[in-house]
Length: 219
Image 1: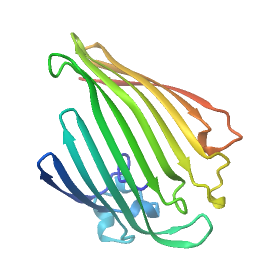
Image 2: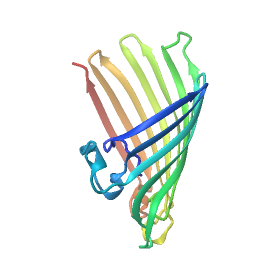
Image 3: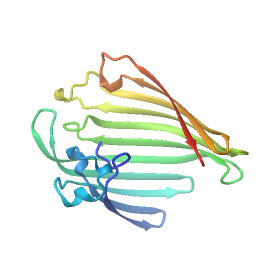
């Protein structure tokens, strides 16, 4: 919940050391997002002024033809208010990501299908989502007139069981299906359908269906 990513990317430094098929990487980023600062709008400014929190992350990865496994850990140096009202200095978590190509077109680069698995954990004393499980598959195929792609994913966000967290359900589960295509060379469309069970971990809310359409123009 503190990872510096879109729309709140953060100024920082990363270093990567390849070791054959494996690699080690570390990163240090502006961690002011933990204090409510929208780092995506500030550039490097908050690195040199208060608040001075840091977001630290490290990852070990191993790759092979058509697959990848990564294990990582992260930590924020900020001060947090626990769900029980006490203060906690710093918090962190662990994650794992695995990917594997299960089908590839005979002509390399034309198309493939990849499965993925994501696991994550965080401190339930301060994090609303203390466990995460995600899995699914993504398919793409280069055809005359453009590239077609599709994906199916399931994401289960395990919610903190601390009384102060305020959740009446143990988890929120989302199932997503999308299809991307190019009806003409300058337009790409991607309809996306999502089903969300127990939205927000609130037992009083009905399950939800969400339909979106994303259009990208190449001018």
